[in-house]
Length: 402
Length: 170
Image 1 (spheres, rainbow over the protein chains, first blue to last red):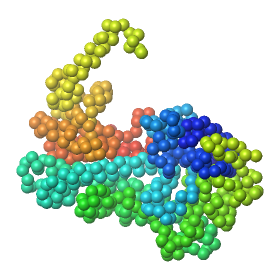
Image 2: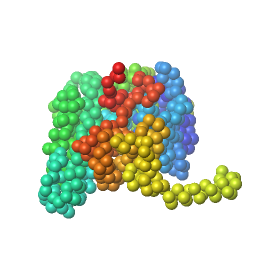
Image 3: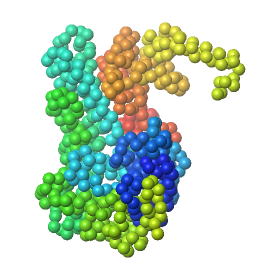
Image 4: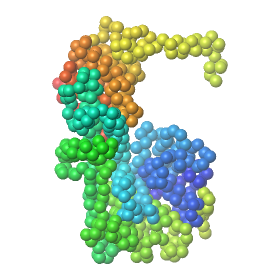
């Protein structure tokens, strides 16, 4: 696929800016804080409906404006389509494809696909599990747009269940110990002691808890299974890239660590073990007043030569690992959707040594449209620069460089 | 602006109607649907089957169902959905009244017609569990829209439609 044209209206520090992409590689050069990454962020929004930098639309709208807009013209094998995303300081987004306003914004996903690679991605290895979950969820959303809905449903159940636990443990503090036990055995619905008015109140509570448990298990199982499925496809690709970049010197192992183990391929069996684990953690959930079981506690382990990459990997090893993951993402998206996705390289090329740079550039060649940001052109290969479109970014304006 | 161009009498009539609606429209004491009378037209109607109660979240759902002219039973409006985040539990809804009503009237079927959101599903399951010992409980089917093409349905909708499949009428 090829992004032919992008227009930003009151987006971040851009007032009104059009960009026509004329080569497979576009280099955005400029000092820091001029708007290079903002432009990549706009493309990221088109691909995922999310920004890795903010979750609030008003951060994306230019200061002083109420409405911001990203418009794009995208060439795919089946034809050219027009994408437009309108963001508001207050209120819901509008997503439009070829002049048709979408009822479900989820339908916007899957039109433009992109892999983003920034210097911050080293946190995939060094940072906490939350970053790894966002990474795999973002990839899944692009491969299977319905996953955005599945994940949103799970998060909604999680929020409701947490609110329910907080309310009912707060109430229980004022009551006696005997009632605490009834709260813990959430599946038990019969309470024989207590006077009558109490009985109605309390016998209803555990029933509602059991329903939230079941909803968490049903929606959570969907999330876990899909994460597992995409990782099973991604891991061999990442391992191959890693082997090739490290020159066979290192062996990479990637292991999905779901909070609720995938003991079988059958959703019903997983849901059952999900519920059993909730039961076994009931006392801890009661004391910590939050949900402790489910895919919101998943992690992904990276191990190089039997050593966890997070703790022992050298800087170079960690970079090789992240590069391998990104190349695997490119390959997987291309295999699934049948067209090469865009590649967004945010300030990352300069950090790679020559060997890794070459590996990346060889892979990209002219097949993947690539948008690159950098503060200086010095570290780029001369021949490569000649074939690229170079744009200078200066305070929210783009100027073609000669 | 449109109102300013209309004759004064018309504007006054509208204003009076709005005030009257605000003053007079309350809830039906039986089903909690909007009503100007203590008991609403549907609950008082002799033509409607008293053995069936259709449970909905809001009054607007009653209006939507009435437009179909397909349903001949009575209603019960819960007044919302279970949502702990908003501090809404069964105690804030007209759930107790529903159980009481089903017991008193000896209802033979309760149809749960609540949207399939997370909160809607929780409410459906909760009310369903409470009513099961007393009566037959059903829920409306969810699936493909009329004129919808199987090929274009998303998989969540398709999964719901499969779940709610039924025997082909011969």
